[in-house]
Amino acid sequence: MMMNYSLSHMAEKVLAARNSLKPIRIRGGGSKAFYGNPDFDVQEEGHVNLDMSSLKGIVTYEPSELVLTAMAGTPLNEIKAVLAQSHQMLPFDPPEFSDQATIGGCVAAGLSGPNSFSAGPIRHYVLGTQLLDAEGRILTFGGEVMKNVAGYDIPRLLTGSMGIFGAIVRVSIKVMPVMRCDQTLQFDMTQSQALERCKGLRALALPIKCVAWLPNSQDTSGKLSIRLAGAEPAVTHAIKTLGGELLAVDAATQWWHDFKEQRFDFFKNKTLWRLAVAANTPALNLGPTALDLAGEVRWVAADVDPQTMRDAATRARGHATLFKRENLDHCPPDGVFHPLSADIHQIVKRLKHEFDPHGLFNPGRLVLGL
Image (tube, one colour):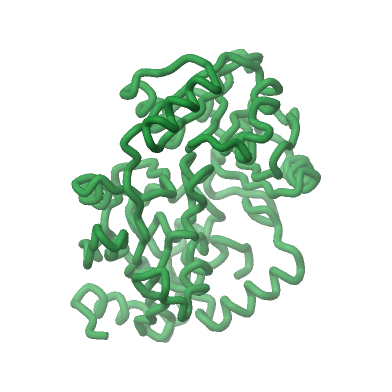
């Protein structure tokens, strides 16, 4: 493909870094700089910064096809505004944490919001990617339609890879229509009561979009929020079936936004763990906890020993991530992410070598040592 000036300049920087064996730090809007392992000492001078912010713009958008393609540095706010004009949205509900968040950073981090309870995670919606590799080449994977399965696994591989395989420069995303009827119910209850109420929610023939529970300041009780979205008759039936307090639409929209963006006081703790666990897992009793995805995600605001967290997650058939920490330059000896099994570690190591044989891109950001 023909490269524009920004891409050509980036390719030259990558080749220069390869020739001098300098590590490459990929940066977009910086909204998720806190997330992941420290790639290398921020004071180190012997590295190359690859700034993706110049790669902006929506390349193609076909509302009738439910597909949008954009350069990696395109702000999420810009994409959401364009989609809203056609009453469409990013179904995986990505958290932004800043107005500077970009679509490339969104894919590289692989984070999804509360809507993923019903819609599924971001990796289900990444149709295609373009990657700047260690040879300065632009590699294209996947396509712009769901039927195009050639190389489709590579876009999924790159989603959540934290840039360790190369720099994502363009993405194609499947989008979805906004539901016309969107209502939220709230219930006062304890965490244990909320977990009991969440059992079997996925099996109900109701248009349930999101389910979250947030404790009050004493962590003895809190609010269970259930978001309903779909055809008006189906939503009305669900409201009658479930009961609870019906929130005003604007208040509900703000509540879900604040929960996704972690603006509530609960999330202001300097240490925050994210545990993904099996459905119907009971309370883990690890400290102040909020529930997302009907309890399949536990946010724990406590400075707990990493091994304790990981053991609890393993027993619950899941994994634990140190999502936020006070000192970004420090993390557990084996990293902020749940340690990989020996087999998976070898697979990731081989993939890293195939895409980035000199280990230049974001070293250690996803897996320490890679």
